Amino acid sequence: MAEAVAEAARAKGAETDLISCESFAGNVEDYDAVAFGCSAMGNEVLEETVFEPMFAALESKLSGKKIGLFGSYGWGDGQWMRDWADRCRSDGAVLINDGVIANNEPDEEALAQCRALGEELA
Image 1 (tube, rainbow, N blue to C red):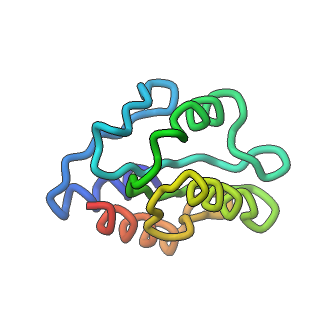
Image 2 (image 1 turned 90 degrees about the horizontal axis):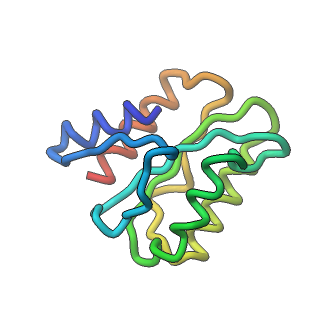
Image 3 (image 1 turned 90 degrees about the vertical axis):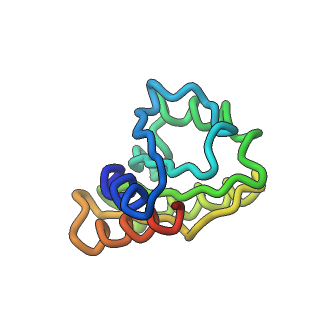
């Protein structure tokens, strides 16, 4: 999903960095737009060990920032994405859409939505 977002943004002329959450320095201020991807875990929450701490640490930097969200889930109905989008709006982020979700593996529809997200972020 991340690769589809990045490829579409590059096709529209944007420079992109594809960075894992373990490696991200939290420097959102260095980017015009940011796409965050995270799978739902447990009771439809963001991955708690690495992603959640990284994301929580940078939330104060999201006000006015153009962002997109994407991820996958294995069960439930995508509540984690709705909660995440609401959280980002509360942080003052400018969300591109309500988030792209895929049940288990992304199908062609989810990948098309990821490409549309990348184009919009560009």
